[in-house]
Image 1 (cartoon, one colour):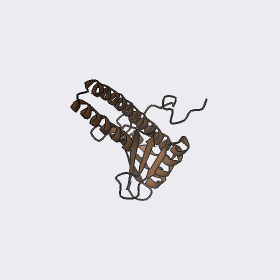
Image 2 (tube, one colour):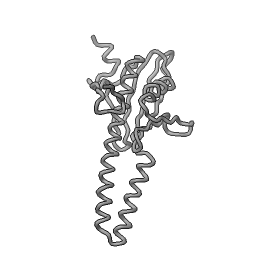
Image 3 (spheres, rainbow, N blue to C red):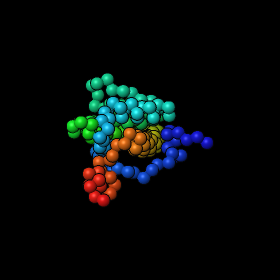
Image 4 (cartoon, rainbow, N blue to C red):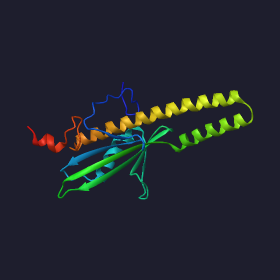
Length: 187
């Protein structure tokens, strides 16, 4: 039996190597990596696309005016907006900061608005049973969208960790709360 990244329940997730900075308000998480190999953000973005496209993920590249570099879709309900920033520290030394923002797709937003409007119309027309069913279906769909967003966030985190190992990126903050510099300096 073959496994793909779209089958997240079958995919083996490693223990996190780097500490994830989560912003619940922005529905996003951030990772930071240090490299002395001179890798640029375009190289990292291309490697993300190379890993995800064969697994049937739809990827849209920014045209230059967006707040993101890549938009990665899983199914019809969820997407991740990926942004990578590079800090140059002289020579080939770089800090790559990756931000992954979990978002609902346009269809998911339209569905949620539709549930709300349909519920309001049902209440105004005096059909409480229809309104109750609409609320229940809307909440069920919301829970599924939330689950799918969480699943896509986990998959993208794993993809970034896999790529970090492949191209020798060192996490700036590890799970042991030691920075890379501290762990290198101490025996």
